[in-house]
Length: 455
Image 1: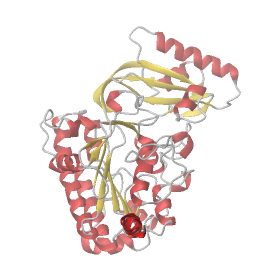
Image 2: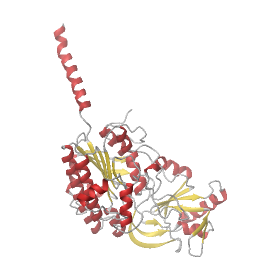
Image 3: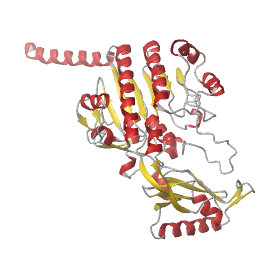
Image 4: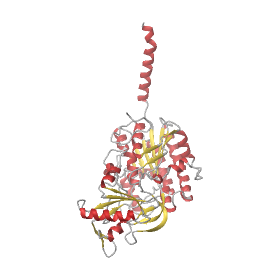
């Protein structure tokens, strides 16, 4: 009788041993790389664009990928990057646009640079609480973040390699980190400096951190593709050259991560939005000024306002100075209805406050105005409300628009090869990476796409 139970007992002991081994096996390192404005089409249809992107193709072949990532409202850099690391919508995490609402220009064109403005836990918070070493080179909204080795994204000038911006970077980053790295690598690119050359220089700092600090979670950000598409349009020859150069940087970071981790690194490549080609402009603040809802001084600068548009690009929130001012709300509603009903209207959709709240963007806005894909919203106050604009690329449009879809590629230990994840929500990325790191992120609204959702 006992002998018949021996095989079953052996199987049970073996299973428990495998479970214990799996728990004892450390989670892989995760290197999260953002290529700003990388459309999934550039990866999935690389031949159509004549692209030579061997590193992106390798990630595609060796790991799992989303056919498309549906982003957040608005589809711009700072809200999107914060959703990528929190798994929640902008209305909940608090980074509602690139810049805080500032109708009178008192913030001197400041951005949402500071991690204290993020209202929910991030991946780096979860990793830090689990005792994992974290690091970052230039990820948005990281000033003051709980990241062990942190090179922040911050600038106060538009001048590349501005001396004072270099000092600010050293002060705001992990004390001593930039000075140590610069002794080996030379100056870090400071100021608003977002070319492929700046990406290349920042990549060197990411490689150095991976090789010398051995983080379990590292974040890296490249913006040269986005800047080029703004200038020459999506899919332009110059933009494709920029992407090919960034592809090589992705390969360099992957090689450094594999070397540092003994081949146990997961590479997660993401983007924040796509791009559409725009050639017309909608100037919402000019429409509000014409209605007497914005007042200007003799230099054309706003001195007071009852309603003002927040945001440029594809969508803008309409904010009321007094949210209880129903007269202003009705007047704004009439203006927007007229713009939407105009022949050859530049407006794709107008959301009211309840619809904007449900969409998870522009908290506190009375309305959200979203332009058609070939239209960008401008903050100009010295030109007609609607008219032509110079042809260029832009984003920020409704996340449901195909042009705004972004990318997610994942390869490494624990990632199935050749899996098409279909269309996913941007809020799914953070819980998926948390699952790979084996750290809890219960605040995330999305789910781990590598595991079936719980029934």
